[in-house]
Length: 253
Image (cartoon, rainbow, N blue to C red):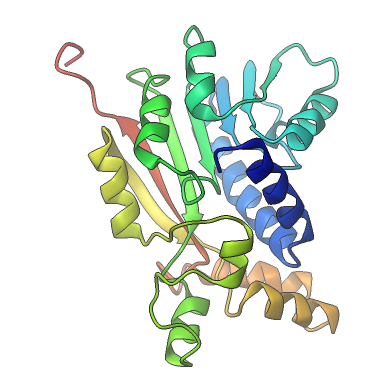
């Protein structure tokens, strides 16, 4: 996504996606648990979508949002209201990094994002430029080896685990990751992986999950169960994550 038109198309596709709001809620559940554990004072969220994380997490001194989408950025500003602790920058991360050079962040959240950017290396270089020695970076992306993709492979619906689905194409997602390729990409771009894993087991496609909700079979109790099920099926969650710290340069070491 490297143009205003791409971003506008993405916003429309995101808002029309049938199960994505539930997936986003599970992603947010994981992020809130992470923030409760890390307790960062200064947070940067890159790509807030239509529901900025500061709406659900208030324990911070400073919260900055970088969001390229005009509608999403405007929504974040409206959600921030008069809270002087919150700053919203409408820009791509690669362009925002220079504007944020004087900021210091304890935590940078790259949630549901890295699989969408056109140039991962340039993007991660911009993130690294904002990292101090103690900054922790969280990345999550869809899991190429999730349970529902493994099922689709065995059913003959896809020819390989890294094949793009129709939903991924509509959301302008040019690549898929498994935990090894995600870790390798981050390591190759100056980060060390401190933690990794997956969350929220999703047995079926977004469309199928939405259909199960429509008929009343997929209720909140079942969604809670699927969130907890990853403990018994490690690595098979619908999305994977890595937690990172920037490797110090020779001058810093």
